[in-house]
Amino acid sequence: MRAVRVIDGRVAAIEMEAPGNGPYILRVARAGICGSDLHMVDAGIARVVLGHEFGGWLPDGRLVAVRPTGECGTCVPCTTGVQTGCPLCWSTAYGISADGGLAEHIVVTPDRVHPMGPAARPEDAALVEPLAISWHGVRRAGVEPGMTSLIVGAGSIGLLTVAALRARGLDVDIVARHAHQAVAAERLGARVVEAPGAGAYPRVFDAVCTQQTFDACARAAAPGGSILEYGMFWAPVTMSNDLLFKEVSVVPAMGYSHDAGHDDFAESAAHLSVHPEVTDALVTHVFPLADAAEAFRVAADRGSGSIKVHLVP
Image (cartoon, rainbow, N blue to C red):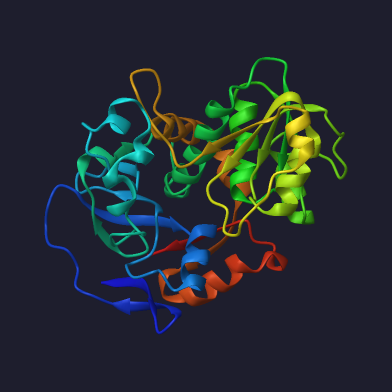
């Protein structure tokens, strides 16, 4: 079968042995390229088949989204709804530590499978993973009815945060760097702002995680408010006195979680199953798996007009 790996520092579609038969051998329908994939390739740490945003068909014909992260289910993080702290979370994650979904087939475990609704399309299934990240962040932020939130950064996570906030009936302002991102944000129901008001927002979402965006969030956050930081800082970031004097909380959000009261991944699968307009606003480019190198180039070039790039095996 064909799969995407990094060979001599470059993304390439290669031939490798296909898995055998079994009830949880997924025929991949769509897989997305994440900013984390680009960072891993640049840093030289991609050593498996890439792809942690994917969905496809099980042998029984069901269209499913796949949660890439693992969990033991018994440790303290797992039993308290902080699965990202489980030792198995990232050490067994598809596309990060184990072969991922940028392939024609992949063996998945049943606990990571999330069925899509009857109206869902393959492209919707491949967008569940990044929506679950944004869904998790919105829940972690503790938004309340009537709040207007600010999002700094209109890449896929920022735009999916718009979708998650709008699903809760909240107004959203967003700072977008590129014109095509602004168009997508408006399609999803956000108001694009160039200069957000200082101290105007009780909840601010940093969807880029750089010094520049962190400082912008600190300026925009209201006294006693909070900044939700998605994912990872790829370079060190320092705090400012503005943050301290206003007593602004910094809330991290990494991945997704579930407990008796919520399941970020399942809720995201349910939402995208009935809201195809979210997928239509974000997926800008689709390539065959054989053109993986070009797909990664386009995904890394915001000047190309890309937001979410998908590959089709």
